[in-house]
Amino acid sequence: MALPAQALAWVAEATGTGRVVRTRRLVGGITSAVDACWTPTGQVVLRRYVEPADDDAPERVAREAAALRGLASSDVPAPQLVAADPDGRHCGVPAVLMTRLPGAPLLRPADPDDWLRRLAQLLPLVHAAPVQARDWERWVEPAELEPPPWSAHPELWAAAIALVQRGEPPYPGVFIHRDFQHFNVLWQRQRVSGVVDWVEAASGPPDVDVGHCRLNLAVLYSADRAEQFRRLYEVAAGRTVEPYWDLLSLLGYLPGWDGFVQVQAGSRATVDVPGMHGRVDDLLARTVRRL
Image (cartoon, rainbow, N blue to C red; front, side):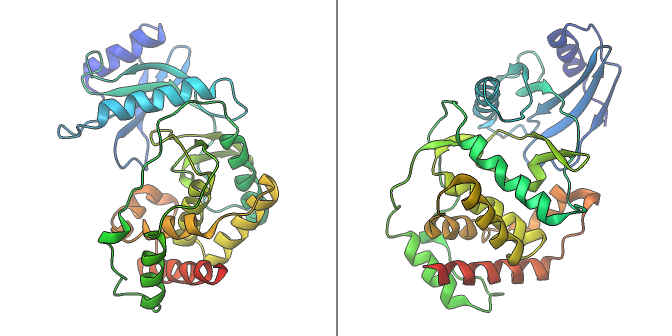
């Protein structure tokens, strides 16, 4: 799908190159349209919020732009901000323009153990980044949830829902990615080359990032991989993950992940939805036992 002329003109002006040679839609976008743009001097990535009813788009643009500015002075391999257009005055719709990092998501690693270790070692770098961000927000309200009909352990889901309503444990407020998982980490030659998609960046509990990644690992792989990631993170960070945040992250699965995970994976992996439910069910049972 070709980019509108107004968007192409903005990219050309913002990069100072005068023109865009070609573009290509990137797979995996759910809340926005993401395109790679080639200019005479290199590649950039354009994220556009194209849904007319998306009232939160200007805030998302401002949030990601602020995160990228802050990350420029950190050890995290993140894109550099080129330009931001929160109100769509220049691009036609709210948009962020950033440099394109080399590499691509790696969903079938040749060495899964090394892949998982490197993934876990990234998070302490993110949490140490000197970035000021808005306070984090929950993505689900546990009081509105019920145990899923497909679960072999409905009583454990009910217990998890009840537990997270009792109040949050104390936590160190740090910079968090908020959507940290394998779809948002780029790899080149089996090495991490970048972390992308900073739209949800916030200040909050570090274990929210751990729990969200564990949920994604269970969705695509297994509860064993999710548990292995937790242990590797605890070694890298020198701290123990609080099960409360794991449970809260797992409850985020209930509103209907089976409707969009395949879109994220694209042609890179086939998502087994019935198996996905079972793997998340298994991970929840293991997490409740940790309590």
